[in-house]
Image (cartoon, rainbow, N blue to C red; front, side, top):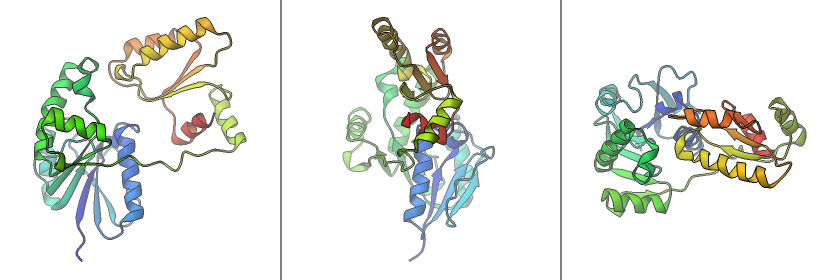
Length: 268
């Protein structure tokens, strides 16, 4: 049986580690343990200093087209045409105009349709335009939950048969760690065990202002409340959030932590 040439768009990994980028990384890692027959082309930005090629049948392909560029569909197509891909998976839901015989996209949610106020005008226009085109152009769609599939069918008029629900897996790195290892990492951040933890990008749609308000109420009601720890990179339109966090000395923000530190934070 001939092997297929499959592309996975991992350009987003050059910009951030959480969210869709983390999903893409874990997907590549898991596929390497399941498939040694097909050939995988991992599309990455040239400025990404890490290659996501976990086994010999995975190859890095540098693509100069930036993610979420207004001409992305056409520019990426030109870069991919010489690769002659049998299938391209777009984890960030926007496939190129051409570049593969078949296109599969993943839609994680439709938050921009439900909560437009949490988007800039430009990003809202971009997402609305792209999602309608992407769902029509894609040969198949992956949705992470049944709820997301229902939303796609209802709001984007996509036939249910075109959508497959695939639940997210579990990262086996998240496990209980030795106490001394956790303690040592927490001490680096000036923490001890027993705190309230938030993990996610610091941006308006995460409702962090609501979290801060709730924490303020708890502080007013209870003495010796555990500190609130925010672990996450700075997102867009977050000036008000940064000011609100800075005004609360009981809150510790860790904007740039690696996986080992994150594991210790969960354990603590």
